[in-house]
Image (cartoon, rainbow, N blue to C red; front, side):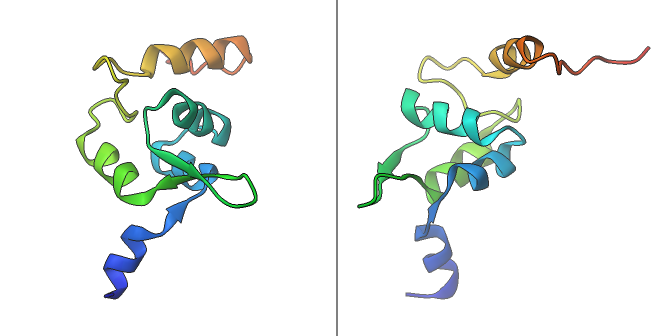
Length: 93
């Protein structure tokens, strides 16, 4: 297997997926549980993402977030989660 093929086949941790989309690892894990991105479990029970799926979603993403199965975006959900945590991004005028 060539080097780039191997990198594409390697599983990604939630924090690595989070870095791709600019969200928290918790959000990436939630996307995995919701089925937005395909995941599998290691023998130790840890969640891993298929790198090729993450890259495909990142390439076609318009909002910076993967699409939900119904075709909508997570942008509104992320804003609500941030607001609840008291860290909403507010545009300065």
